[in-house]
Image 1 (cartoon, chains in turn green, brown):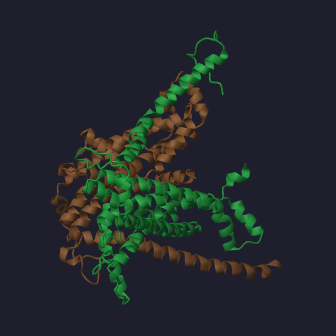
Image 2 (cartoon, chains in turn green, orange; image 1 turned 120 degrees about the vertical axis):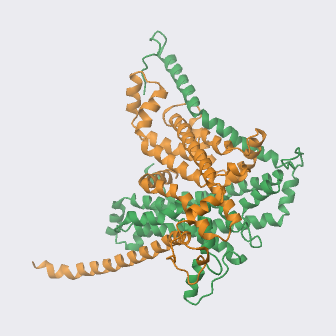
Image 3 (spheres, helix red, strand yellow; image 1 turned 90 degrees about the vertical axis):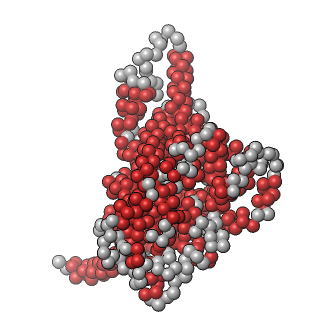
Length: 314
Length: 290
């Protein structure tokens, strides 16, 4: 579309060069408008990632001058038992919380999508816990999961079951954190609910004409139509869950016996408690690589189960 | 008339199973609602109990006496007024910074053409995938070199350079505004700045509110950055102050819960007054992200 501009020079020059001049002016404006992000990107993202790589080749302690140590940090890392422990803890938490969280939030969305009365009330109830994350919630759950007086064990005792020491027994600590994360399932529930409500009704009607039952409609219409949203949530949720360590820091601080020492917490400790910036940067870079690999795998596997409506239209 | 006896049994059958299905759904919803609400009730009830009643057995949701003074009492244990002021400064500086910077950048991506625009936009989305741990150490060293650690600046400055998630959200919204409006304004002699501030932004209030709400809630409960950058107690935010309180008075759960509830009130107020926007924002970005 040609845009006439009142202040553009009179048509003594050829049309082509006028447009070229305007395009150039528009391009300058474009870069001016996005300049804040460009600067932020160069400083806080790209610059940070690259300098992180350089720091990972040093023994910087943030107190003394850094010295180049080559790949020593990476050698140390692959011989570090805590590295493997932290990585497997994070994968455990990520798979557990994202897997169960996806199931729970999808089921909640399906329930709310049944044309129920009071849908906005139920939606508020399920959604609210995901909004009030943070330290207040962590303290609340320390109480709820308390071994002797917590709400859950009191409830179990009512049925004569002696509940475990949720946060103090190594084998129960991680399941407790995963359980707690399910309280925030309402966040993705809202996304799924919006997705379910936008599945065209004519697809269900067509399936009915073809003789599909309730399960058939769910499996052959709902799931394929929702699969891109589910994929998006799996990727974003997994990255977020691998990173999140603040709740863990408050609730167990990695214990008992490093059972909840998640990767982010290990990096935080290495960098900001022990001031080993070089080693912490090496740990962070391995995390970046692992996340890229997992995301690529998720996209590769997605080919087989994610259905894009756009693919058919093209 | 003749049809009714034939139709009726089947109709009844469908209705009968539908009623059972409805009942099952409502029972499930009620049970789930209770388990989602109970922790909140437990929080409120604990905050009103006397210390010796906090861990009474069997647990009771109704306090023996309502100790309303737990709230002022807990609030006075640490300089929570100072923490509140710091939280307000950081949060509002983030909200305003994000609104301004993200609007500018989103306008650029939505309305202006330039070489490499699509690539840059892809790069912008890619930054959402970068784990925070990778950038947090260089960022800390950068702010440290600039002498800004142990100030509120590291918590405020990044917001003024835009945040990919908000830029994406605003850009999607801007692109839904008809281009004719821009062109009409341009014919009237408006430049890009005027089109953004006088045409696009007034029409984008829902998206801007969504950004403001997300920025508010995200920063209000942020613990990681305050934990890393702030050392002096007088600079602590509410989240960090609450963490200090927890470390010092681990057993006084009634006071802890009272202060926790106070810190949650702004979030709850914002949530209840803007739930529709919230849900819209979540679904807009959730759907758009495929």
